[in-house]
Structure formats: C-alpha cells, structure tokens
Figure 1 (cartoon, rainbow, N blue to C red):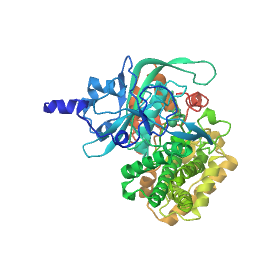
Figure 2 (figure 1 turned 180 degrees about the horizontal axis):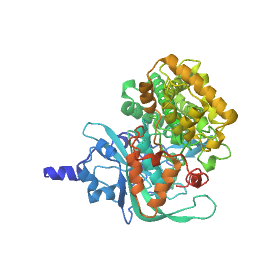
Figure 3 (figure 1 turned 90 degrees about the vertical axis):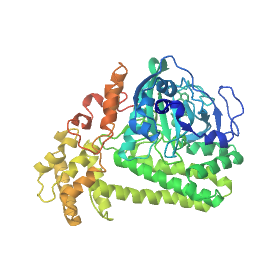
Figure 4 (figure 1 turned 30 degrees about the vertical axis):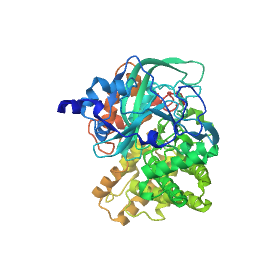
Length: 534
Ligand code: AMP
Ligand code: MG
C-alpha cells in the first residue's frame, strides 16, 4: 500500500464493532419482518440502489471521523454511504427496540429504516457508530419500506449539523446521498401518494441507543438480555460510573436524567420543537435524535407543534417538552428497576431531572437576558416577557438579538422601543397603544435591572449574542432548500450548511437567512405543518 493510497481509500478506516461482538444477535439471518426475541440486533445489509450520488457532506464530521478530502471525493464514498458497498471492516445491523408512542406502549419497533454500518475508531481513538437512514428494509420495518425521501433527508442532514453548531447535544450527519430511486409517499395521508426522490443520510453518534432499546426487554420480562445491554452501555458509554452493579445502574439513570434535562434546556433556548418525543426517539446519551416533523418556533407560542399528527392533542408542543421528557424518563426508570435495584434511587433520578431542568432553565434565561447573576425575582421579569410575546406574534430569535442592542445609558422612549424591537413583530402595526405601553414598562424595568447588574453594555451584548442565535434552520428556509433540491439544485442546502456553521456570528451579507417567516410560508406544508410521512 502506498502512502497516497492510505489517504485516499475508505478501506483503510479502522472499525471495531463492539455492539455486534459483545451482544446477543438475532440467530435468524433472513431479512424478513418479524418479532425478534432475546436479541439486541439483527444483521442486515443495506439494499443496493441504482444511482448513488453524493449531494453534500459535513466537513467537520468527516474530520471527526479521520476521513480525508480524498476519501470524501472518492467514487467509493457515495457507494458506501448510499448503501451499495459494505467495507470488509463493517458489520451492518439493525437494532431491536420498542417504545411508548404518544403515551401508549407500542411494542417492538426497531431500526425499521436505519442500518448501522459499525463502529469507526478515529485516529484519536474515539469510537463513532455510522448509521445509514433510508437504506432499505430490515426485520423491524413492519409494514413500511425502509426508505427515506429527499425532503426528510435534507431536513435531517441540515438540522443535525445546525444543532451541533448551536451547541445542542445531537447526533451528527456525515453525508446526504441520492439513491437514484423513486419512493412513494402520501405526504398528507390523504390518499395522494407521489413518487419522490429517494435519499440516504449517514448519521454519526457515539451510540444510537434509545430508551426503547431497554424498555423492549423489560416489557418481555427478558431480564437476561436487558442486563447484558445495560452492562454493555455502562461499560462502553459511561465507564466513569464503574462496575455495573444495581447501585451503578441507579447512578447511571440519574445521569441520563441530568443529560436529558440539559438537552431540553437547550431546545427551549434555541426554540426547537422535536415533534415526536416518543421513548423510541429519546437517546440514552441525551442527544437530540431522529429529525422528523420537528420545527423551530417563529412567533413565540408554547402550544405550537409542527407535527400535524399531533395537532389535536399537542402532546409534543414546544412548551410541553420538559414535562414529556420527564414522563419518558419515568418509563425508562420503570424498565430498569426490575434489574434488582431499589425504587428510591430511581425516584431520586426523576427528582434530579426536575431540579436540573429548573436550575438549567434559570441559568439559560439569565444568559438569554444578559443578566450575570440571575436572582429569584428575575423569574418574574422573564415570565412577563413570555406573556408579552403571547400578546402579538413576536419572533423569539429576532427579539433576543434585538434586545442585546439595548443601550442601558440612554433613556428609552416608546418610539425608541419600537425602533429597537419592531423587527421581531410579525405585524408591526400591533405594537402601539396599550401593548406598546406594556413593552415600555417591561423595557424600563429590564434596563433598571441591567444597570443594577453593572455589566458594561459591550460585554453583555457579546454574552447575549453567544447564546441567542442569529441563524436557525427556519422552517421555511429548509423548505426553500428542499424545493430547489427537488429540481436538482443543491446550492441552497450547501449555503445553509455554511450559514448554520456560525449561528451566533453576524455574518454580514447573509441577512436573508435571519428573516422572520414570510407570509407565503405561514400555512405552507413543510413550513408550519409536517406529517410523520418521510
Ligand atoms: P419515527 O416516528 O420516525 O421515530 O419511527 C417510528 C418507527 O417506525 C421506527 O421504528 C422507525 O424505524 C419506523 N419507520 C419509520 N419510517 C419507516 C420506513 N419508511 N420504513 C420502515 N420503518 C420505518
Ligand atoms: Mg424514530
């Protein structure tokens, strides 16, 4: 092998497939839909596709994996990451998991359209599981086809990278490939299926284990397999906790509760709504996982959900996310208790979620408002702000960037306030009369609070702009990129990926990506309404 060859070929990546080596496998080799018992996974190969084509990749993820530019540019790259070629070092498999969906136990679900290629070990010795989403059916595909369409793959690819750059714990995305196949989808479940371009995203995470991977064995009273998976997870992903005894399992649960709280605080900070917080979509590492009918709050509204499937119950709306995370953690706790532990430490874990979330939220609100030491009566100031948001459609993202520009030394007037925050209002005409008086009152008190805090304006502004993004993957921007991509133009996907790499920077010349939702997008499918069809 020449030196050049070493840098060019994917064949030289190092893999160490612990999951398939150490955990019980489904003994049946056929790729047929079935209930899989006493096994953590089934070996299954991606389905070959007719026209693999790389659309876009994330250079940060390629670097993280130790992939060179030559590797990404190689013909093999699209072959491997669209599912046509399995490298000899890979050991592809689909995981068995269950889940509570919309509050009900749903039984076995599993990787119905995700195929893990194996665990890559990068030059630093870090382990990363690579997973293809949309690479064909598995034993867990139930009645579906195992495929994914371009629109949902663009959304997953862009959003996972955007979330990472925002500092939100998330699975990553290496690549987005077209398959050359068409996939039938009934986007609105209204009897109008259309042929859409098929695509595959390669996702990357230290582990793709979900709450549902543990729940499934507990639901079947298969404590032996549950114990093996718990031991594997603690040893590999939580080694700092020590030997997996019942006490360790309780501490592990405690840590999952805290990590989940941290993740949800971030979601609330940036205005992200996951949309389908079923327990099969909750990562054991506290990562945002499974970008389906997610959305970004535009006008601030706690009861907003992008998911049309959830429109009536609004179980997974923006404001419910902390409560649902807690409910999901309780299901995970119930699944783990049979491993011989006491109930009480698990109860403490649940309490730790609430405490962590409350503290995390206060810190986050203080940071968003630029207050250096958040005090108990600042909670009221923040809550009043949220109630003002509810009185006229106000864009949360634009608002906090505008607020950072406030000058504490200049006395504010109603006209000055309108000038400062006006751009955050969907209808500026609403900002008058009683509402403007209320805003003036709030800004006056906020200004007084900032003066008391004593932080120089420049420093406060910098701190606020480091937690209040200017650029998020606004629902309509993703849709614009999809509309173009469906016509074969991928330029906006690439441009958005670039913009979203630096979400807190001003990025002069890129203001068009920091505009509130235009009117055309208000009721347009894909912008404010999404179904699970993907
Ligand atoms: P989700 O609502 O996307 O989290 O999916 C719930 C379950 O349905 C998971 O087990 C998925 O793997 C499975 N699933 C979703 N879409 C498909 C599909 N097109 N083909 C096979 N399985 C799917
Ligand atoms: Mg899912």
